[in-house]
Image 1: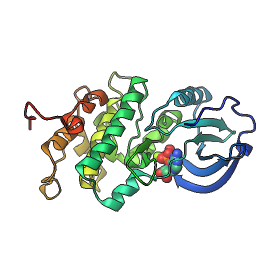
Image 2: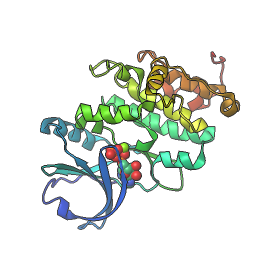
Image 3: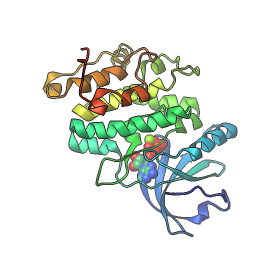
Image 4: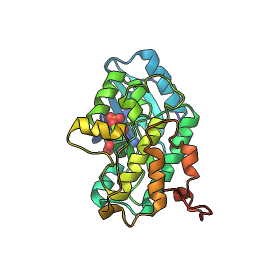
Length: 285
Ligand code: ADP
Ligand code: MG
């Protein structure tokens, strides 16, 4: 396991040898790098600073450094220049889960459960620390390696580091994963249920994993917003008839408009679709 360096910010960029670009995200370009001293490989995420205040940035970075969970990309070190932020993080090699979905079309229930369970465990951990990801989507779920379905959550915290308007712009460019209360713009206030926006995204991700397409989709942005705001989606028989009623019930628990009624990470880990425990009471429809 990587350990956090203590000699932060001593000539940091020159400590690394830059290799190829690994990928690009909404906020950054990610490079494969080698730490010269240890010959160890890392991923280096280079972010444009934009207008984020130094204090806000510092607070978030401190939080990110504390995070230690097997399904969350571990941060190693951080430094900055006048116009860029550099994050050196654990290197993962399986690529984005999104690519896997494109490749496979959909996953078996067992595979989907393996992925969703890890996602719930990492969210339970983050939420217990008071951290909300706010930008969960398959592009931000990386696979740790090519051989199994171990996931590594990337990008958490960044939505807060970056100016809110930048975040809203990128999010509203692809609102497929955005919870109704975010579209309604009431979640900016620090409510008791702000972590529920992550749980909405879990529902969307679970849905996509099981059938290969999103629950809310329209070329017309107004229609898309409307279907999200009403949580109007269904399970078309052509794709869903062989999928268990537990799986559908599980998804329903997240795609609930009222954030106070939406399942938390902790509650969802006890759901029969996750535990696969025999049912003494039938699920409601
Ligand atoms: P952004 O915050 O800008 O959205 P992401 O964290 O989503 O950036 O990363 C963008 C892409 O870079 C990912 O889809 C992936 O291909 C690659 N990448 C990001 N983090 C890592 C990592 N730790 N190891 C390997 N590749 C990574
Ligand atoms: Mg991303």
